[in-house]
Length: 269
Length: 271
Image 1 (cartoon, rainbow over the protein chains, first blue to last red):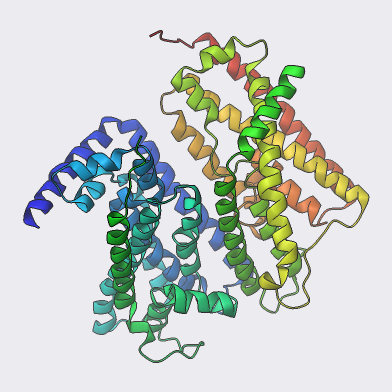
Image 2: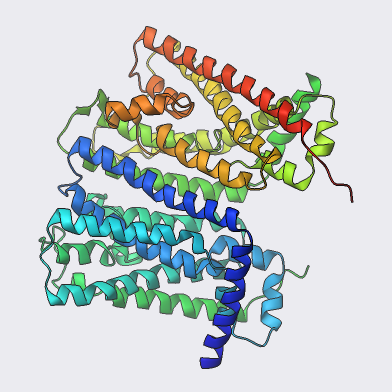
């Protein structure tokens, strides 16, 4: 484990140094990625002002949802870029994953260290800033419990998205054609969790409660932070299972990944 | 002209080839439409309309915004940049036709194929599954007269031309800069906001709309949306189409000028 961590640090160093060889290109990427969040959230704020909130939630409250999930997903996209199903699919298709299998180091270590999307870091910061402004606008009453729980929610969300990445990557062992459909869960999940989830049609909400339990990761913790009553009538512990749900999904994804690895056949080219 | 038609045909066939990917993309588009429709319903709440847009029209808009993604290449288009950086441009420039016309023809084929695969299908999905997206009683909005249909078709063609021309212009920066990808990406990001792709322009404050109107972007998605949803009167429709045409001509001219300057400084390394 310690050896792997040391390896990860050295390989990651090499990856980041190679990023920095193309400095202009890197900063252009950083600027444009940062602009994406600004532009998207800017458009949302303008429209929310026109309509005076959405589904009974004020701009500040929506900003909390939007910012927090943006920060967690973008940070996962930064450190977990190697397992981005699109990118991982390319590795499999081009036979680079075979090289990784042959090297005497952990698979996950190598995949993670091989790609690091540092240019998304601006979006992580933006996410936190948007969340912070939202907290101020919404007038959250802080308690020690809330402060202590917040990092756990963040970890839960990262584990959730990591699980989706791992599942998507595993699917590419069999097919790379349908990988765009994974966007429904990753980008779609982020988009969905950016709004108060009671606004969605019941069948959609149930799918994202019982099948893919995204509702517990951002919406319910936000209800708790805001001391809002639960309009959906879930048990009282619903806001507190975010870390468990995230880690459980990651665990399932890990089992699927191991299963996929056992059945992996190279493309043979 | 026969040459151009052949290019259109080839590009069309090439883009019809990836059916599984198109299907997966379609699922993604529909899902995002679903989410955006739910947001519209929640935004409207008890309201009947906002800025002349009814809830029905707003939900229909979410379908239109997903339907334009393919033909207008809303997310990314780096073909010319790629051709310049790889050196392919050298052999393309030798072909007996202008470089702008060469890519124009190929983009017609690409747009037609994605129109069939992505736009028609997503709109049909919207029509048949509208119950999933909207409150009871709401219907997918359709143009009301033959004249309006005609205006929509015209607006779509002009929107594609404006879109292609700004995409080409941004790509031509590759003749100068090895970092053209970044420039193109920036143009795309602004286009999402200013074209009315993320949200209908009418929902922004007036001064923001006025700023957007200074760019070519609203003359793509927003023109189609406003004409399709019947938000404009007869003379306003003509003015919108006229502006689209003017932007198309201006951008086309800019493309040709930039291309002339770019080709003059192009150096191809042999090897």
